[in-house]
Image 1 (tube, rainbow, N blue to C red):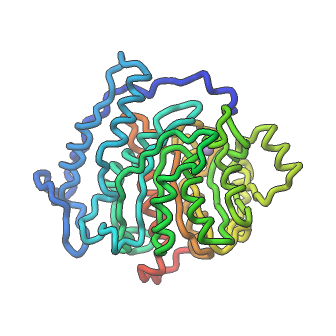
Image 2: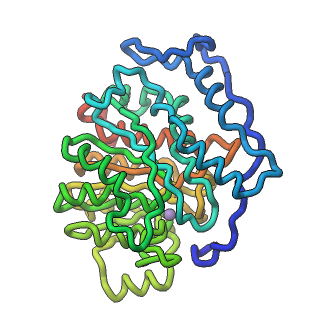
Image 3: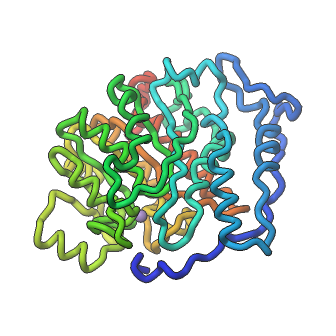
Length: 380
Ligand SMILES: [Mn+2]
């Protein structure tokens, strides 16, 4: 479905009561200990169930009688409450000063056009991350040891057509991290936020290119009268780069207007269409990028069978392992300077997509820092 056709429909999120918190007894799991593990090897055996029970208790789903507006306002409120730290790591690995990776949760949702709920994406991802196994079975290492700090949520007012400095709060959070060679991993929220990050990266890296993994080109100059709509983010990013260069992977939704712009302007945008995914050569995809790369992952690039929790789903998406191959190849061959994961719109009671997003964040960190972590195993 084209984004242009879907504005009127605004279905309320599913209102099924969230299933009771999982307390499945892993061997040695201590249900009563709420302190985070702090041993040399972060143990996943402590605290998880109790933390999970606590957080799950605070986010009961709305009863079926509530209006969509009430549910939205509840989602907004929840999204600004204190968020759990990614992976539930102990302080040793989360100190801002020492951490190479800084997770920036951005529960921004102002221009979504179809399914709602991406304001709750950061919370769902961070909560699900408490259950992600810390040992990477592929890299054969504990990637969290690179140090992962989770910042407080970055809350921004709606960016309008006349906003002078779009997504300024995110820009200001990213800028010092870029300058000190930290790796910002931004968790959305709707896709338009990527612009705030790219404004900071483009100032530091003259040759910055963007790998956009997405179902949609997002190349409309504006949408609904707003140039900062999530449907226009690709266009905004393109004009923000010093030497515009974007590679889009997984695309299966383009409007006539976008197609016309590409045919007449011939922008430096390489598209790898989802319908050709069986023939993709990942090395060829990576070769279209400059040395310094920012990765923006709209979760709707994935097939909606594995990622139904997103506002504008499209059939025919990519698989988990294709996504892994792509990220792995770009991390090995290029200098990936930052990334975001956007458009997760959690469905109450359906935790697999939230967990997928959390694991995606952790895998991306692992691939990016495999060398620094001393990974010697051949994995690509
Ligand atoms: Mn998209």
